[in-house]
Image (cartoon, rainbow, N blue to C red):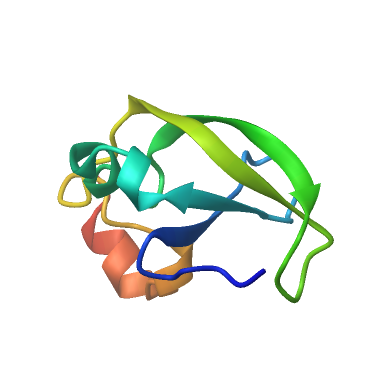
Length: 97
């Protein structure tokens, strides 16, 4: 059974307890657009769903999300450092208070 990319999106989340992420499949039709817009790097979230065998490559299991809740936002203007961007030392120094 293939995934309909128009109706679902895959997010990779990490709670910091391990270097590994878990893939979470979110159904766009059943998730408010405002919630989806708030899913940003460093946002605090709570995901409820079913852990099942992954339909994709690279992981054994994934979570089919039934509920996602934003516990706290992360303002990219106020907290611009994100590891995936690999900021330079100069950039990091410019953000020191």
